[in-house]
Length: 131
Image 1 (cartoon, rainbow, N blue to C red):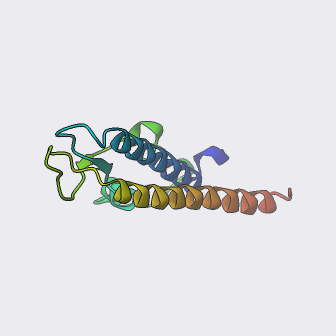
Image 2 (image 1 turned 90 degrees about the vertical axis):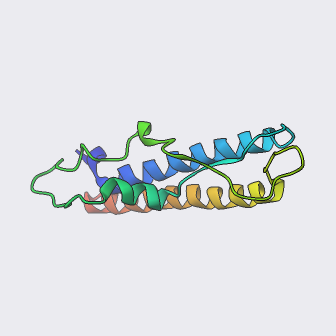
């Protein structure tokens, strides 16, 4: 019953998105010297989540009504977009500084997802009388 709450699904999806994006950043850093390699990244979680819900008239009429639309483990890696930036003479466009900045942002996103999950869990526990 409680595993179907949308806030928990969204927090989990946000954490999975951050993990997938961190993996792509690691691949970009590993390929920094590969001639012709183009950096890859995912669309932001906000954009991806809004695309999923665009045009949907979200209204629950019964418990579990939104369970088919939830953000599951197979929803990512979604669209992989080529990174922007200047290319080196060998055609590689990976910027190590840019990738490190993205990695810091992704860690913040993951920490935010975990904070949402923990706060929601605390509220749920309080509502049923447990601590």
